[in-house]
Length: 333
Image (tube, rainbow, N blue to C red; front, side, top):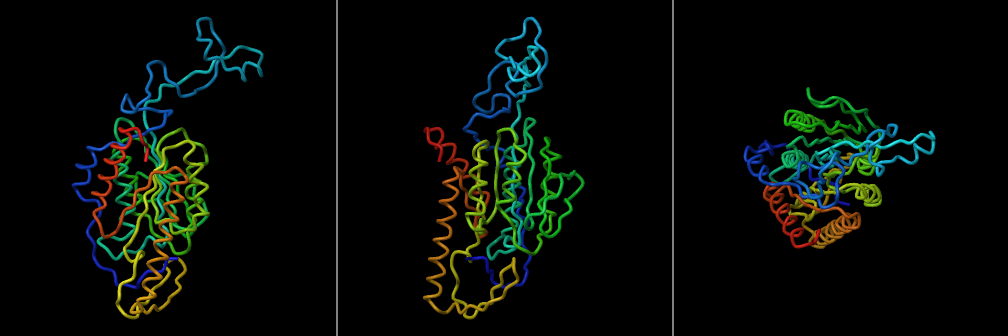
């Protein structure tokens, strides 16, 4: 339901990454409620003094070593006492899963849904890329075929039909800007995407605990992506950003409206003058969004909805402020 989009002629649209974005977003911070393996110099609760808690390599025991660091599995295999070294790792790692399938190449409001995805990626990047924090991304432009990790500083990654691309996590503002250029330059390809496979790329290989952000319209069947989302929540704080266009929620009364499924190319003509049809469409759209919200809630993900006809930046500021207020009062969502 709700994949068909009205056929409209392209119109010039303002750039979604306004200059005011960085100034506003720089005053915010992502609040991570669960214990992380890597922590940023006291900015996140739970940082303990000492050599660190990130597991490193094992080495043979030496007099004076802390016996609490004994690596008993290695000791049993080698019959020689070994201790597990730890690494002081003090940065946060954030991963973005960005859905750029064909259904995102649509919009009847101020922005295209694709532009809102890029804007959300920019917002999360500005929120996290500081003090050595690392940020990476996986991008889906179709279904199922994986592309190996590649360098992305010089421009957008190669993409084709059915490509899932991984952009390695790196620190630094220049690297983050290169990531955003790569995301913005990724071409949307025809064909249906696989949101479940895209999210699964954040589960495999397993990554140390951090923040995972999934940006999509979530129009794929919930059974396709709900289980990977639940698996992702086991190790990470998960934020799901749902991108919505107002025409996906209700139809205007404009007479006969040609609509096309952007992922299959199937064309239909809809008589929008029929009030019963518009009512059924609105009810089905409401039920669909309720299903999406329930699946995200069941996965334990924070849920932010951005619309193409609203100020995405203001909505995000309000969301982060509400999260901060809720967690200060002892609740999570």
